Each structure stands twice: as structure tokens, then as C-alpha cells.
Length: 423
Image (cartoon, rainbow, N blue to C red; front, side, top):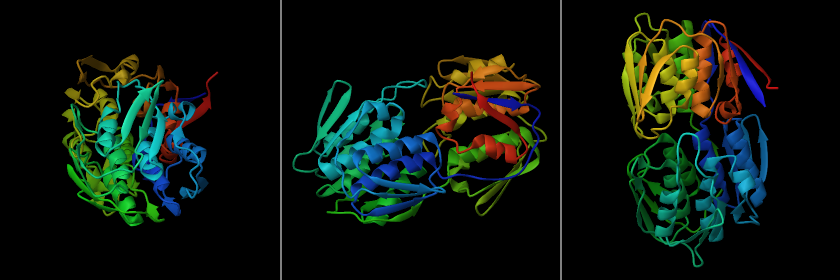
């Protein structure tokens, strides 16, 4: 176990390269199960979640090579159809092997990953979609067993849930449908850029998918898919996190490279509303600390709305922004574990029924805090940058799940962060 010691009073400047998207990489890696040919995937971030996914693929029989952000996978012989609990429990997104395994092997057996600290996230929509394509679903002993003895058949399925569309559920059904007989229509599909990137990857393999990025996706089944060379889209949540870092602690300005500004519209709009000056040129964004900062009200929503994965970081910004800001998370109302830790640093935050009311204070003070999930850990790092004194953050394995070397990247911008053993 390791922890961060974040030294306050950071004054950031310079540029940083944004890594490939973790949330796009995971289903794309899983999708290599759909072909026996070699796939080359570039800009796969070196984070624990992608490492676990590669372990799952190797456990299933895939040949995997990885070097400098490029992963080469060949799933010529898949000798298993199950993903065991000891691997699945480490990463919730591992359930996205269900769709491609079912399509390739006509069977998949995957352990249920359970809920998480930000609330229960069931896979009932995944199962509803896959059963709509003809899979027989049995849940027993903590495992989900899916069988399609005579293959899958294209149908019209609805993936909309009470909190909106499911991204991984849309991915799972889309991957299963590419080898199904006939035409599949996914209504209520998730519109996130990561879904579009997966569709682009599958189409490059020979799939026939249209409508990705809209609530209605159409898939015409094909008999086989081939290998492909694909570059993963930039990570919009990592980019958003560094944008907030610039808004909180830039000496003058910082520049983000390798970004897709069109994936960040909702975040950029809020930061501009808060007073930050933002310049966009091609694949770069430059942001400076607001000279007249002000608060804002945000509601998390499915894409293209404000992402739930950015609300914790915005709480850190609002904690030191004059005035009152309100953050309502409609996707995961329980996702405010970071609030109590920020209060230990002096933040004035009140949380009730999925809504945080934040009264900005002049400054935060370093304190021992504990990371509860991936984005909460990023919020604590951001607050530690501007706090007085030292902030000790334990359980940083959370941040290593989704941020590629965030301590090194911030250090290159001028921050002082020590990664030390947590004894």
C-alpha cells in the first residue's frame, strides 16, 4: 500500500499530455475476443484497470504483448468462457467480456462484481439486453451464466434505466450483436464518446454499426471480424481533472495536449462560468486561474450533460471559490464520500439527498485524508495542491485505477507530490 504526501501552495505551469481513455480502452480490449486475428491498440493507459483487463484476457487464452502504451492482442484460441471472481472483483468493468464471449463462444460465465462505494450499480440492463438477443441467463452462486446454444439473433432491445442509459451495458449488447444473425436495434443507447470509440473499433474490424453517439444504434450482424490497428480517444475525465487543476493552481496558464475539446463542452462551459480563461487550438487547451472566480450550480447528467465523473473535482474547486455553489449528482446520489474528507481540510460543505451545497472558503489546510474511490482521490489531490501545509492521502490505489502517473504529471507542472509506502 502507498500514500501521497501533497505539499500545498503549488503554482502550476507548463504542459501535460493527456493519456488515452481508460473507459474507452476497457471495452475495446474486451472486443478483441471477437476475432482470431491480431489487434493493435495504441494509447492504452498504464493504469491498474487496464492491467486487470489484460490479465482476464490472458486467463481466457489471449496472447498479449504490451510496450509503451501499445497493446498487441491475439485471441486465436479461447480455451475458456468464464471470468473468475478473483479477477472480476478487482475491476467492475470486467463484466464487459460477457458480450464478446457470448458472441464468440455462444456461452459466457462471469462472476458478479457487486456494488461499490459510490452506490449499487447492477448489471440487470446488461442481462436484459443480452437475453433480448436470445441468450438464456442464469444467476447462481454469485455467477452469471449466459448461453446461446444456436447463436444470437438480432432484435430490438431497450437499454434505458431509471438513471439513464448504461454505457457498459450498451457496449456489451453492441459487442454481442455484431456477430448475431440479422439486425439489432439498441434503443435508449448511451451516447458517450467511449461508446462511439468502441463502435469505430468494431467497424474497423468489419462490423456494420450505425448511429453510435445517438440513443438509437443499428447493428447488422456479420459472420466474422478481422484484426485492426486502433488508437484510443483521449481521456476526457483526465483532461477535465487537469483543467480543474489549472483553474485552482495555475501560476499563469497550463496547456493540455492530445485532447478532444468537443468531448469536454459541458466541463468547459462551467469553468468559463466560474471565471477561467480558456483557449482552444486544435488538440490543445490552455487554461488559467480565474482572476475573478465565482461559483456555479451543476447537475450531473448522461453525456452530453455534465459528467458524474467530474463532480468530485468540481467540489474541490468550489470549496475555495467565493460564494455558494450547488452540486447535484443525479447519476450516483451517494457519490459524495469526498465531502467529509474535504471538510477535514476546512471546506464548508453540506450534503443532503444527493446534493452538495458548498460555501467557498479563503483557503484549505492540509490534513490526513482517505481516498474512497477513483474520482474522490483526484479531488483530494487537487485540494492538497492549494491547501496550506501537507496533505496525506491514503489508499491511493484508487487513483491508480484510472489516472496514468498523475503524480509524475503534476510534478512536471511544478507540484510537489511524494509517493511513499503507507506503513
